[in-house]
Image 1 (tube, rainbow, N blue to C red):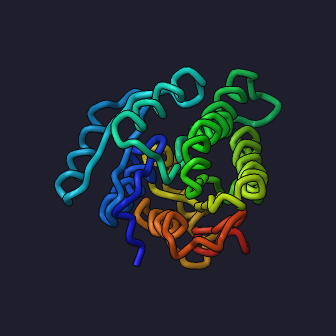
Image 2: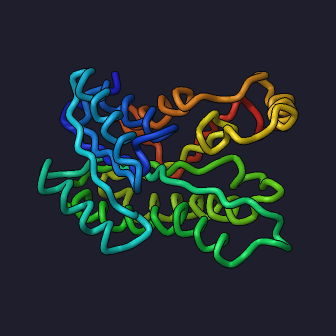
Length: 249
Protein backbone atom coordinates (compact mmCIF):
# COMPACT_ATOMS: atom_id res chain seq x y z
CA UNK A 1 0.00 0.00 0.00
CA UNK A 2 1.13 3.55 -0.83
CA UNK A 3 3.94 2.35 -3.08
CA UNK A 4 5.61 5.43 -4.58
CA UNK A 5 8.72 3.67 -5.88
CA UNK A 6 8.49 5.05 -9.41
CA UNK A 7 7.51 8.59 -8.39
CA UNK A 8 9.32 11.89 -7.98
CA UNK A 9 7.93 14.22 -5.33
CA UNK A 10 8.76 17.87 -4.69
CA UNK A 11 7.99 19.45 -1.33
CA UNK A 12 8.24 23.23 -1.03
CA UNK A 13 9.51 24.29 2.36
CA UNK A 14 10.45 20.66 2.76
CA UNK A 15 13.34 20.93 5.18
CA UNK A 16 11.63 21.69 8.51
CA UNK A 17 8.42 21.14 10.42
CA UNK A 18 5.50 19.75 8.45
CA UNK A 19 7.51 19.82 5.21
CA UNK A 20 10.28 17.70 6.71
CA UNK A 21 7.81 15.12 8.01
CA UNK A 22 6.15 14.96 4.58
CA UNK A 23 9.48 14.62 2.78
CA UNK A 24 10.51 11.72 5.03
CA UNK A 25 7.15 9.95 4.72
CA UNK A 26 7.24 10.12 0.92
CA UNK A 27 10.83 8.87 0.84
CA UNK A 28 10.06 5.97 3.17
CA UNK A 29 7.42 4.83 0.71
CA UNK A 30 9.83 4.88 -2.22
CA UNK A 31 9.53 8.34 -3.77
CA UNK A 32 12.57 10.25 -4.88
CA UNK A 33 12.19 13.52 -3.01
CA UNK A 34 13.12 17.09 -3.92
CA UNK A 35 13.44 19.19 -0.78
CA UNK A 36 13.00 22.86 -1.60
CA UNK A 37 14.14 25.42 0.95
CA UNK A 38 14.55 29.19 1.11
CA UNK A 39 17.48 29.98 3.38
CA UNK A 40 18.32 27.24 5.89
CA UNK A 41 20.72 25.04 3.95
CA UNK A 42 21.83 23.12 7.06
CA UNK A 43 18.24 22.05 7.80
CA UNK A 44 17.77 20.96 4.19
CA UNK A 45 20.96 18.91 4.24
CA UNK A 46 19.97 17.33 7.55
CA UNK A 47 16.65 16.26 6.07
CA UNK A 48 18.44 14.93 2.98
CA UNK A 49 20.76 12.85 5.18
CA UNK A 50 17.75 11.35 6.96
CA UNK A 51 16.19 10.44 3.61
CA UNK A 52 19.39 8.79 2.40
CA UNK A 53 19.76 6.97 5.73
CA UNK A 54 16.37 5.34 5.22
CA UNK A 55 17.39 4.21 1.73
CA UNK A 56 15.85 7.07 -0.26
CA UNK A 57 17.10 9.50 -2.89
CA UNK A 58 16.99 13.24 -2.29
CA UNK A 59 17.78 16.46 -4.13
CA UNK A 60 17.90 19.73 -2.19
CA UNK A 61 17.23 22.94 -4.13
CA UNK A 62 17.31 26.48 -2.77
CA UNK A 63 14.64 28.66 -4.37
CA UNK A 64 12.23 31.43 -3.42
CA UNK A 65 9.04 29.88 -4.79
CA UNK A 66 7.18 33.19 -4.71
CA UNK A 67 9.32 34.32 -7.68
CA UNK A 68 8.56 32.91 -11.14
CA UNK A 69 12.16 32.84 -12.35
CA UNK A 70 13.19 30.85 -9.25
CA UNK A 71 10.34 28.38 -9.74
CA UNK A 72 11.34 27.81 -13.37
CA UNK A 73 14.93 27.15 -12.26
CA UNK A 74 13.68 24.75 -9.57
CA UNK A 75 11.47 22.73 -11.91
CA UNK A 76 14.19 22.63 -14.57
CA UNK A 77 16.62 21.25 -11.99
CA UNK A 78 14.12 18.58 -10.93
CA UNK A 79 13.55 17.51 -14.54
CA UNK A 80 17.27 17.56 -15.35
CA UNK A 81 17.99 15.32 -12.34
CA UNK A 82 15.05 12.92 -12.34
CA UNK A 83 13.41 13.39 -15.74
CA UNK A 84 9.90 13.81 -14.32
CA UNK A 85 7.79 15.20 -11.50
CA UNK A 86 4.79 13.26 -10.23
CA UNK A 87 3.87 14.76 -6.87
CA UNK A 88 3.91 18.42 -5.88
CA UNK A 89 3.32 19.35 -2.25
CA UNK A 90 2.80 23.09 -1.87
CA UNK A 91 3.76 23.31 1.78
CA UNK A 92 5.79 26.49 2.15
CA UNK A 93 4.12 28.99 4.43
CA UNK A 94 4.55 32.14 6.46
CA UNK A 95 2.71 33.98 9.22
CA UNK A 96 2.88 37.72 9.90
CA UNK A 97 0.18 38.18 12.51
CA UNK A 98 -1.46 41.47 13.43
CA UNK A 99 -4.91 42.91 13.95
CA UNK A 100 -6.41 44.07 10.67
CA UNK A 101 -6.50 47.74 11.72
CA UNK A 102 -2.74 47.62 12.30
CA UNK A 103 -1.75 45.25 9.53
CA UNK A 104 0.65 46.75 6.99
CA UNK A 105 0.48 46.15 3.27
CA UNK A 106 3.91 44.55 3.57
CA UNK A 107 2.67 41.92 6.03
CA UNK A 108 -0.35 41.24 3.84
CA UNK A 109 1.73 40.87 0.68
CA UNK A 110 4.43 38.72 2.29
CA UNK A 111 1.90 36.19 3.57
CA UNK A 112 -0.08 36.11 0.34
CA UNK A 113 3.11 35.63 -1.68
CA UNK A 114 4.44 32.82 0.52
CA UNK A 115 1.20 30.92 1.01
CA UNK A 116 -0.81 31.49 -2.18
CA UNK A 117 1.30 32.97 -4.98
CA UNK A 118 3.94 30.26 -4.49
CA UNK A 119 1.32 27.52 -4.91
CA UNK A 120 0.11 29.10 -8.14
CA UNK A 121 3.62 29.42 -9.57
CA UNK A 122 4.74 25.91 -8.59
CA UNK A 123 1.51 24.27 -9.74
CA UNK A 124 1.56 26.04 -13.09
CA UNK A 125 5.15 24.95 -13.71
CA UNK A 126 4.74 21.37 -12.45
CA UNK A 127 1.55 20.73 -14.39
CA UNK A 128 3.27 20.93 -17.76
CA UNK A 129 5.25 17.69 -17.29
CA UNK A 130 2.35 16.10 -15.39
CA UNK A 131 -0.01 16.76 -18.30
CA UNK A 132 2.44 15.10 -20.67
CA UNK A 133 2.73 12.11 -18.33
CA UNK A 134 -1.06 11.99 -17.85
CA UNK A 135 -0.51 11.41 -14.14
CA UNK A 136 0.08 13.71 -11.21
CA UNK A 137 -0.74 14.71 -7.66
CA UNK A 138 -1.06 18.28 -6.44
CA UNK A 139 -1.38 18.53 -2.67
CA UNK A 140 -1.76 21.94 -1.07
CA UNK A 141 -1.22 22.48 2.65
CA UNK A 142 -4.01 24.80 3.73
CA UNK A 143 -5.23 25.28 7.30
CA UNK A 144 -8.40 25.17 9.36
CA UNK A 145 -7.68 28.88 9.75
CA UNK A 146 -8.68 29.23 6.12
CA UNK A 147 -12.02 27.63 6.93
CA UNK A 148 -12.98 29.34 10.19
CA UNK A 149 -10.64 32.35 10.41
CA UNK A 150 -8.38 33.41 13.26
CA UNK A 151 -8.29 36.80 14.92
CA UNK A 152 -5.01 38.52 14.11
CA UNK A 153 -4.49 36.37 11.03
CA UNK A 154 -6.61 38.00 8.33
CA UNK A 155 -3.73 37.70 5.84
CA UNK A 156 -3.00 34.05 6.69
CA UNK A 157 -6.67 33.02 6.77
CA UNK A 158 -7.31 34.74 3.43
CA UNK A 159 -4.32 33.03 1.82
CA UNK A 160 -5.25 29.59 3.15
CA UNK A 161 -8.90 30.04 2.14
CA UNK A 162 -7.70 31.11 -1.29
CA UNK A 163 -5.63 27.95 -1.47
CA UNK A 164 -8.77 25.86 -0.99
CA UNK A 165 -10.53 27.63 -3.87
CA UNK A 166 -7.40 27.30 -5.97
CA UNK A 167 -7.28 23.56 -5.25
CA UNK A 168 -10.86 23.02 -6.39
CA UNK A 169 -10.38 25.02 -9.60
CA UNK A 170 -7.21 23.14 -10.51
CA UNK A 171 -8.91 19.82 -9.73
CA UNK A 172 -11.64 20.57 -12.28
CA UNK A 173 -9.15 21.65 -14.94
CA UNK A 174 -6.87 18.61 -14.88
CA UNK A 175 -9.02 15.67 -13.74
CA UNK A 176 -9.37 14.27 -17.27
CA UNK A 177 -5.58 13.75 -17.40
CA UNK A 178 -5.46 11.53 -14.27
CA UNK A 179 -4.14 14.41 -12.20
CA UNK A 180 -5.70 15.09 -8.82
CA UNK A 181 -5.58 18.25 -6.73
CA UNK A 182 -6.42 18.11 -3.04
CA UNK A 183 -5.76 20.11 0.11
CA UNK A 184 -4.82 19.12 3.64
CA UNK A 185 -6.01 21.48 6.37
CA UNK A 186 -4.06 21.02 9.61
CA UNK A 187 -5.14 22.48 12.92
CA UNK A 188 -2.60 23.67 15.48
CA UNK A 189 0.73 21.94 14.82
CA UNK A 190 3.83 22.05 17.01
CA UNK A 191 6.46 23.63 14.75
CA UNK A 192 9.05 26.39 14.93
CA UNK A 193 6.36 28.87 13.85
CA UNK A 194 4.18 28.06 16.85
CA UNK A 195 6.79 27.69 19.59
CA UNK A 196 6.55 31.33 20.66
CA UNK A 197 3.02 31.10 22.03
CA UNK A 198 2.64 31.34 25.79
CA UNK A 199 1.61 28.52 28.09
CA UNK A 200 -1.86 30.00 28.72
CA UNK A 201 -2.35 30.48 24.97
CA UNK A 202 -1.50 26.85 24.30
CA UNK A 203 -3.82 25.70 27.08
CA UNK A 204 -6.68 27.72 25.58
CA UNK A 205 -6.02 26.22 22.14
CA UNK A 206 -5.84 22.69 23.52
CA UNK A 207 -9.20 23.12 25.28
CA UNK A 208 -10.76 23.77 21.85
CA UNK A 209 -9.46 20.48 20.41
CA UNK A 210 -11.80 17.53 21.00
CA UNK A 211 -8.87 15.10 20.98
CA UNK A 212 -7.27 17.08 23.80
CA UNK A 213 -3.84 17.60 22.27
CA UNK A 214 -2.08 19.61 19.61
CA UNK A 215 -0.63 17.95 16.51
CA UNK A 216 2.92 17.06 15.56
CA UNK A 217 4.19 17.28 11.97
CA UNK A 218 4.11 13.49 11.91
CA UNK A 219 0.33 13.64 12.39
CA UNK A 220 -0.02 15.57 9.13
CA UNK A 221 2.33 13.61 6.85
CA UNK A 222 0.19 10.43 6.49
CA UNK A 223 -2.69 12.42 5.00
CA UNK A 224 -0.35 13.77 2.33
CA UNK A 225 1.08 10.32 1.73
CA UNK A 226 -2.41 8.91 1.14
CA UNK A 227 -3.42 11.69 -1.26
CA UNK A 228 -0.15 11.19 -3.17
CA UNK A 229 -0.78 7.50 -3.65
CA UNK A 230 -2.54 5.44 -6.30
CA UNK A 231 -5.06 4.46 -3.64
CA UNK A 232 -6.38 8.07 -3.73
CA UNK A 233 -6.76 8.12 -7.53
CA UNK A 234 -10.51 8.85 -7.37
CA UNK A 235 -10.27 11.67 -4.82
CA UNK A 236 -9.91 15.19 -6.16
CA UNK A 237 -11.00 18.67 -5.15
CA UNK A 238 -11.19 17.49 -1.54
CA UNK A 239 -10.09 19.23 1.66
CA UNK A 240 -8.92 16.77 4.31
CA UNK A 241 -8.98 18.23 7.82
CA UNK A 242 -6.25 16.88 10.10
CA UNK A 243 -7.07 18.87 13.18
CA UNK A 244 -8.14 16.65 16.07
CA UNK A 245 -11.70 17.82 15.47
CA UNK A 246 -11.10 21.52 16.16
CA UNK A 247 -13.02 22.65 13.06
CA UNK A 248 -16.16 21.31 14.76
CA UNK A 249 -15.69 23.59 17.78
